[in-house]
Image (cartoon, rainbow, N blue to C red):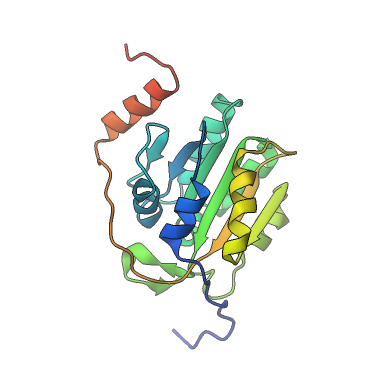
Length: 202
């Protein structure tokens, strides 16, 4: 592979701190996590029955969040995922824009690298701007979080209903963070999440 000449500027925020800030005083927020580090970061911020951790299905986090948002229109829903995972599901952003769920936010932790497969440069690291992609497909509100001072507004946006969905791109440092591992029992996580929503297992 040749030299990358249009690489994006690296982020300045630390992922685990940023996620913890976003999930402070979460109230009735429902959270879906993309595989890998976003799951570890969300779990490290505090396990919660309203967290639905995805251990696989790369590219599927945003669409899972869309389904939950449509089924639970009175609850705010946040998807917390990484740039690599969202790049694999770019079409999901267009579908979300068309569906216009006012209660859905997609938070992309963007370090410009594929953290789970060895730290290779991702498309966003080579210049693809996911905030601009979201605007181009018609997402109603796009926040580009580049500094710690922007996190409070982003956190408030997770709970606010607007004209449609939001995409929040958080520019993070490309760094290794320790793993904080929730259970990998998919059946348990599904049942816990459903019980949190008031559904009684049959």
